Image (cartoon, rainbow, N blue to C red; front, side, top):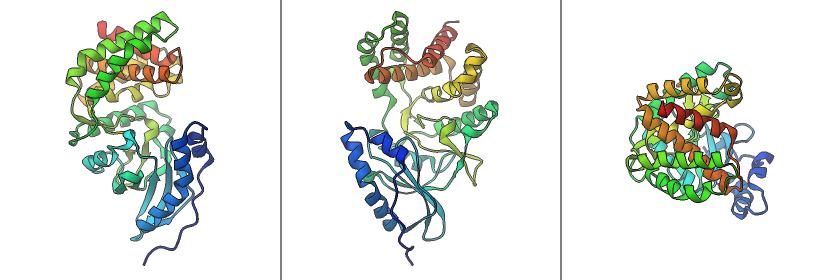
Length: 311
């Protein structure tokens, strides 16, 4: 028997704000279609609503129950380059350290995922040592898997960043920051020819890990990428930056870096270069958004790693 019809989906105000800017025609069109899209997949996959809607940075999340009584979540977000490899990545991981994919329609941006405990993110764990150990363990497991054929690759991203760096750095106000961006680009250029073939999450931080039943902690919201695991480290190095600054930057950053590179079995010089690549990527995004200064955390992290690299 099919589940009873679910009430109409109300889109959270915060999600509307994320996509509701006047110039974002694509986002506004997606928002307008979202209630219809949710109703379509609730019916197609025989799902019953099981709680109020939630949301992430880019999508709607509906707690649901399947026809067989299994708890799950229906996730809807605009299809695009960032999400194009999600289904293939989740299938390759097959639930090992990551949320399990139950069904998918990539063209519509719809995913049916196992239900985790959204009320218990790793970000709520007060002990930073526990957080880093969990992230290191998940990162090692996920990046041990080879990327499936056709996955978007770090090689192309790295080459594009190196090309864009000179023009972007010239738009920064501080000469020291311009030199820093050029230094990051030089580090990436040295590695771009050997960009790796591991399956990367690309956004593994404490907000993208939830408590589960079959495992204590599972990663969510990957943006899968084929590449070198050194490109994974930055979100964990950068998290809870306020506490890092209070204790002095160098010690905490290098302790985190050593923990992560040891857990993943990485060459530290290569991992440094690819982490500088993440700083470069963030800098390019900031300049594209019209900023002429780098974020202080990015400057401090890159400066620390560059000094560590040359020591």
